[in-house]
Image (cartoon, rainbow, N blue to C red):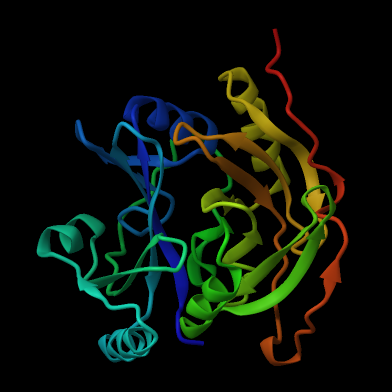
Amino acid sequence: MSLHTLSYVGFNAPDLDDWRRYATGVLGMEAADQTDQTLRLRMDDKHHRIAIHKATAPGFAYSGWDVGTRAELDRLTAELAALGYPASDGTAEECTFRKVVEMRSFTDPGGNRVELFYGQLSGCPFNPARQFGGFKLGDLGLGHIVFITQHLDAMMTFYGVLGLTVSDYIYIKPVQSKAYFMHLNARHHSFALLSGPHEAFHHIMIEVNTLDDVGMANELALRQGRKVTMSLGKHTNDHVVSFYTMTPSGFELEYGCGGRIIDDLDQWQVVEYDDISYWGHLGPLRPPV
């Protein structure tokens, strides 16, 4: 595998305070720091995993992938340049903000900013905003991100160069399209793509350690008046039990537990599923009166 993990993400939002209330009060993250322009959220011993940037238009900003070493960063930079995807060196200010030694950015075929880096600051104490069992991170990385794209083949090629391999795919009947799920470590998938008529960021998934953690977050989301876009349910392919809410950045966040682990990458068999869930994942739900 070329990459190690999906390590951080950046999003845009007009209201940082609302993101902070959502992230700490519902999700259990710690606000590492906040200014009038940025909010950084901690989930483990890394300085932060999620950065929110104040902007008029909400949405996805960038993803950060740990390549481990300078040599690997140079190799991937050369391979992407040969395919027509040149790198831009991360500035000193960008590297300082992300707490990494070195970073280079690329634009994928869907127009999304992709950052490859090594040397992420760790060893920071994590103090969750509420009592719960913690997030499932470590060698598995942050979780997963999902995009809708008009450029499925080109996107698959781009991320294939980075070391992502197809885990399986699901035929989504309502939209008559396939979703491809890709892994780079033992997490069932860190990245997924759905063919569609436009380019869009669909959702981010973060995983916690217990079902009680999921249930508590579900209740807190409803009590905070958050829009639950998909009710509690269990996915077919990665076995995650989760629910979805709309974030202050205008896309969905999946909050779940029990994700499938690929124990033997060499023996893994790619299969097709004909539904996204064994049960549940209905919506939307209204908060209690």
